[in-house]
Image (cartoon, rainbow, N blue to C red; front, top):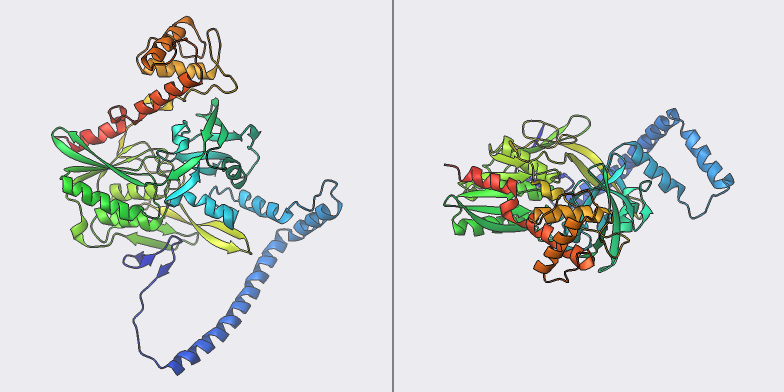
Length: 495
């Protein structure tokens, strides 16, 4: 078992140990360098030849000749064969798909940089983390404050179409390419939600300012409780997290909530540093185990002067994935703290990026994460110590007119159903939410329009649909209606 404590660990989990310095002559250095260089060439050549021979032998046992024959037949005789069709790339995609691993992918360099863009301080797009799960392209989480969140995209949404084009037979890279576009343009996502509801969501692409750490202070039973919300583990997250802790300490907090909901993960060094900032040194944060059973253990490190002498609660949900799951598990099993919410996403594998050819990058799953107590995260997630479901109204879709310009009396439409549920939530009289635009719905829409200084027609036009959607979003962002946050505040301020 390898323990990683004070060593430096990069994003790809390669360890660089500090070596003692010794004085040696330049002649010795030159001689060793020449010998090492020569030996390296020979060893690399012999290893490459041995590895290639081993691979070929294995492939011959798996009918590699059949692959070559099929390739030749397609290139030479297939009626629809096109010289622009990259059969080898198709074969690579097929091999990756056959592993059944949603997180192993083959990218061009440009596509890889775009896929990792959510970890930068700012980028352009809709602001959502996506993955292939069970053959479907799924929204892992929309980023807080992103266009995706603003227009009602939810964690767990399955993307069936983009701009009216069916993408169910396309791979993740192709779907991302369709969703990506210029700043200010609109992309229409065809979404399957909760296994039954089919909706179209128009999202205006924007500039995503990746402010990964935000803070707030609440008063609960006479105590000051600090809240740190972490949206992803990006380039500046660890620095911003430390600054946030110091700012809250100056205020004099008596409890801390770390909100990891809808956090899709990111850099390992960021989560290691954050856990190290909260827990004593020498405790297990996580372990990474490879397919041969070799285990690398990551420990908390640093001085005790950075430890907070307050109780800590972590919030998670089904959109909490990867590094946020590592954080939550460490807080439970090594820190002994409470974690409130719902079971996390269950993304518990390590990917390493390797250059392939001149313009290819293989993102390859090489290890699986384990919790401090040795539990597998992949496919299981982290179970909170207190299971608290979110408010039911968070599942309400925003009002989308689709191809209609106006929704009116006696019409049946999914947008009417959303409007009815929102109006009911806001306290307007509603007696049905099935999407039929009845007379009572007309009166409630008219009353809502009057309250919002809109023309009180009783019909739902685009201005009214937008106002209803904004009202829903504002309600969702109101801490009073955040039952998971309220549960955390209650726990920390208990007598």
